Length: 278
Image (cartoon, rainbow, N blue to C red; front, side, top):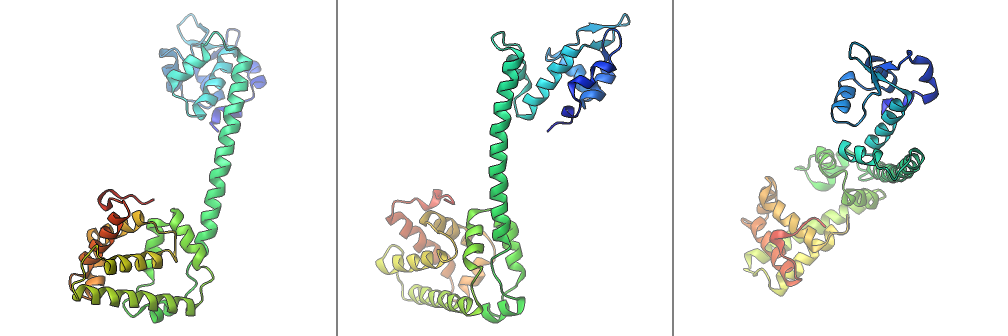
């Protein structure tokens, strides 16, 4: 909440001079800058009720009350122009403003509590995930595996629903579980390489079956739709490292793998070129 809410209105009365508060003392009471109050005066949002003989602004209790109402609306995200319209609406009195603001605040609190719950769930999920030591990772995934890849992946995708699913689903996997799924991955890669060498065409029944095997394998980690799989295939080509990985099994395998995923997506009514991560 804005700092202006720290001053109860009843404490303001004793701070007034005979004709009102100067702009400096007003700014200090409500937690705003003098420049902000000057701006609000210029645009007609909060105009002081009086001025000294020298022309200095003087703010009355009603002006301070209006400032507080502005602060609430601003905290709720209303633009200043809309706040002015709300406050100057002749059909709405001060108590109605307070009731409206209270409703808005309660709604915002509910939204924030929901967001906090979502963050808590992601924190819980991020504490799960792969329970392998770096040594076990290298032993299971091979000597080319770099344990820091997990941290890099979390930095990139850690706030996604799919990462939360991955963390939750793999939390209880044992080294034997990881060894088994790694063997499945290696078997799929070998079958992909063989199919590519044998001239299997993208869009054929055999190629589509391989694409579906890959999607099923990914779905062990998170719910992988064909649209998501198409985005992954696009990433295989666009980002460095993937071509080196797949082409080590068979030259040109990465591009061919993308083509069979794309062709399979099209048979299910998905345009892979415009596919989104959903």
